Image (tube, rainbow, N blue to C red; front, side, top):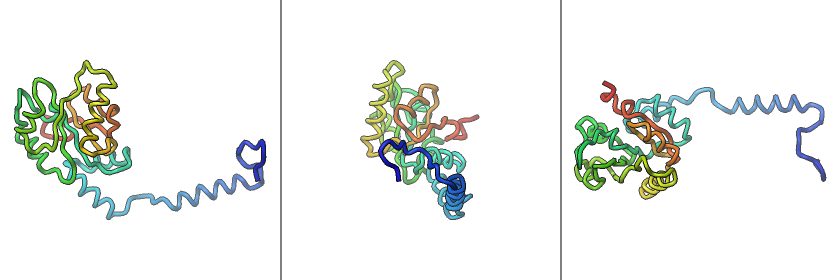
Length: 190
């Protein structure tokens, strides 16, 4: 029993190394070496609902530790060009197939979020994208505010972008991960 002045360091009693070894072995025996087949099937289905391949979904889920409930696209990723423009049909079809996740978009100037939302009803919500001149705090507040307004935790939202600056949104929003648009929309790869 530790008394006054004890620093709670490792025990000096005999057999400590053996007890530590046995503890590690017991802990390893509790952890499965692979996911059960049913869990893998559920995750493959969930990846398809989100419009992702299984490998991408699994890596984001492993990193974040939870399921994805929101997809946050930049207007660049959606190929929305021109004031109030409609996204191309291929992108609209891909978003229309997404199930059980919110589809959000941050819109770069000269486009206006309200006009983009009107022209693209497949989106659940739009807002103005942070500007490259915004401070880190302003960018963080804008991203977190938009995500919170949709009652989503940032750690369960994936950001899909198409510009180097948009990759920084992940850290600012404390998001689950970032995907380049050509990885989410394979037809954009060429």
